[in-house]
Amino acid sequence: MPAQESDIVIIGAGIAGLVAAHECLERGKSVTLIDRHTAANVGGLARTAFGGMALVGTPLQRRMGIKDSPDLALSDWHSFAEFGELDVWPKRWAEAYVEQCADRVFHWLRQKGMRFLPAVNWVERGNFLPGNSVPRYHILWGTGLGLVERLAALLAAHRNAGKLHSVFGCRVDELLVDDGCISGCRGVMEASGEEREFLGGQTMVATGGINGNLQKVRHHWYWGDAPEELLNGSHPYCDGAMHDVVEQHGGVVTHLENMWNYAAGIPHPLPQFDGHGLSLIPCKSALWLDHTGRRIGPEPLITGFDTNDMCGRLSAMEKPWSWQVLNWRIAAREFAISGAEHNPHIRDSRTLPFLRETLFGNHRLVRQMQEESDHFIVADTLPELVAEMNALDGSDFVKLDNVARAIGSFDDNVRRGPALWNDDQIRRIVHARAWRSDRIRTCKPKPLLQHGPLIAIKLRLITRKSLGGIQTDLASRALDRNGKPIAGLFAIGEAAGFGGGGASGRRSLEGTFLSGCILTARAAADALG
Image 1 (cartoon, one colour):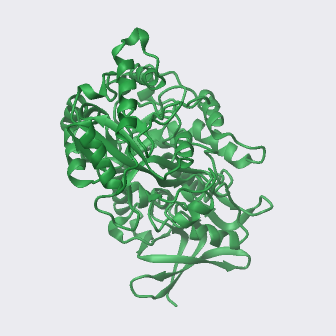
Image 2 (tube, helix red, strand yellow):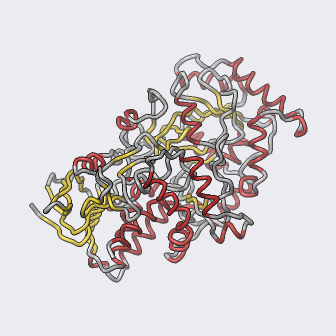
Image 3 (cartoon, rainbow, N blue to C red):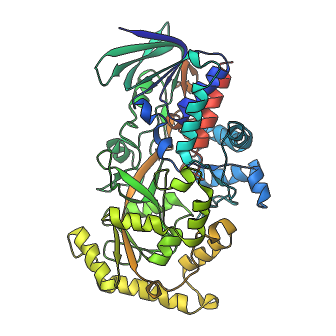
């Protein structure tokens, strides 16, 4: 059996694997980097990621007058995480994140030639539990794809590039052991069926989470029974197989019930695999309705405050889908799709077109979805809209009276004027508009029926990231059931629950994923000396 030897074996060439490879080359180590994808798809889920990062105490925050600190961020983190008494390593990783992210992520990326948008956004503000007390969401110019391409370029041009051996199209399904120490892995080249061995003094697992495996997602579903229909916003290769392998070698996998899924998914118009979905950034000013057209309540669903709570509430609905109803004015200002694919101006760093769409509305994207997606319905009148909603369902679930009542009640409230607005969704819209970065992306409340045409979007829950994973210490060393490091084995990125087997706890402050991959990968490389 052919064997490749190196100092370090890294299983997975997502952001965590790429960063780890770079940092190991910096230290003069030889590296074998293995991935199941082809070379053209290096970078894993980051290739399609929007590129947002929760960062604390950055120059961008200070420039916008945001007073932030690690202490404040950690307080917010613990509020959202709801850690248990046994979550020793997740707590330590949370502390490390808030203390280190400015220096070891923000400034490190700037040194590597990456740039951030000049505005800091405010997400996950919290419903009844405090979330982000201040804006922390920094967006990379170039999105996640730009980050992947930059890291790939740094590896290719590195002074020690000759010490990097990349193997693509290889599925790893076994860890090797020599004298009680993990000594590499064994895999299969999927195109040829050839078995390969990769030997190394240290092995890093960077294979992502479980959220591309809908069977495992359903098994670990937190909110009772999983919905009958789920969209896959991850990738089938993120199947959790290496979690099982690590457990077989004495490792601990924790908190797989903690996931970062999203409430607003639609089927991808050009799917690459079964169940492939797009994660929408739902409009704050849209009304969120159940399958009959009734407004979901009594507390309205509105994005930007507690994604975990939204997913839990939608998971408990009678049907596994919901609707958002809005108009073209709202969609042009607020509608967006998460990821690199549908944000070409940010992805390609085109400043003027990006500013033009931000100021005057993203009519391009709205028209694109009208043409490409049958789940994005546009109609001139409410009866026409409801008829098309039912045609998509193949039923008469949606009742015109219910939709008319929901919109009529909301519009009447808006018409009373700001002094008499008494609707929690309007209050939260006003709150969002008070922050300048959100003001230009959130409509001033106006009656929905006043501005046509009308739009309805049929939504399902969509999977994305695992918040749990392989338990690790602050050096990213995989731990056994006695809390001791497993000799020769590290876990980084999403495979490690972004640190400690679940650094985010129950819910994330959002944007802790790409940055969590960078921090855990750099910690592993530091531990190698």
